[in-house]
Image (tube, rainbow, N blue to C red; front, side):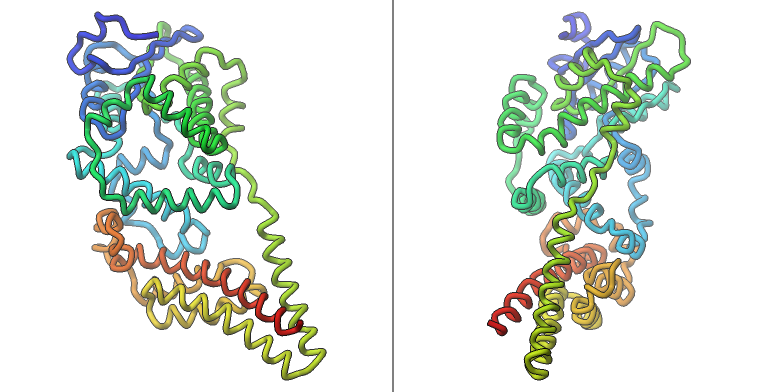
Amino acid sequence: MSVPDTDMSSAGLHGQPIERVQRDGVEYVVLGTAHVSRSSVEAVQALLAHEPFNAVAVELCESRAQGMRDPEAFKQMDLFRVIRQGKAGMVAASLVLSTFQKRLADQYGIQPGAEMKAAMDGAEQRQLSLWLIDREVGTTLKRAWHSVGFWQRFGLLGGLLASVFERETIDEKEIEKLKQGDMLESAFSEFASESAPLYRSLIAERDAFMAARLREEAANSASPRPYRVLVVIGAGHLKGMCEHLRTQQTDPATTAAELAQTPPKAKWPKWLAIGLVLLVFAAIGVAFHRNAALGAQALRDWVLFTGGFAALGAIAARAHPLSVLAAFIAAPIKPFRPGIPSGGISAMVEAWIRRPRVADFESLRDDIVHWSGWWTNRVARTLLNFFLVCLGTIIGEYAAGIHILKSLL
């Protein structure tokens, strides 16, 4: 329901999207915010100043909350460990997503998520319980990635890249309009019609997850009733989460656990890659059976195509010559070396030779806002090297397979 006029009269609350939900003896005051908005910060501060609460819940997971508490923590990132553990993609995606918010922050002089920081600071100052109710961002990204088809993933990647290099300014009035429920509903309906699975992963599942987490935290609270909780979430989740909060009947812990599961990797890409390699090596075996010279030529083609395209990827990333050499050597023997991909080996060589400096970590988020920063910043260039070498290796495998099969026909 809407906030009564008496509540809206408080400074900083006029025109703000607020819902009040009663559930199991708990009153949830849910504030919808825009993540880059001065008025959202003022609304959080006004609610904390004018109304009594027992707890504050924010649309953050543990990793994002830690990033806000200690924004310098990423400077301690172990790049070697990130690559070895296969987290290069997650780190790169998080950095790319942050560039869009940073562009808005630079434009309007307010940090992304400032209203969440204000809520956390307000809870600490008043010694209120702080609930982190959002799903881990890594899990959300993985579920979104696995929810769409192969070709849709290219569109997703294209959208991420476009968010980095887009330079069009955004009117602050448009940001404030994002708090109006009718505009949000129409925007999300259009989004859902374009990609319902993506909408489900990024929005709908998190609505249900956050409602379950609120119920779970409330059930575990030892504080006496009446109990009041200030919930600070993005305006896009306001309607959906409140609806789940009113109607959800499943066990909250079970619901949250189910929605927090990382989806299993699809098996068909792995089997397709294995099938391609087996087919190519079978063709090389046939070539040797026909003629030793023909077999040697097929084997040479495999090395040159896979190693060559991988090396081109490293060159495109402006990697060190030894990193280029590592890519050329690692790519042809990839089928016999399970574990770290060729891009990982080349990237680790790059990070070892051109060790990222403290200044690279300090300027990372500023550098990658501009396309040239991906080549000048040593951290970003290492991640770029990883992806371009992996891409080059895949292209090389297919090109080698086609060339070798044609030579036998």
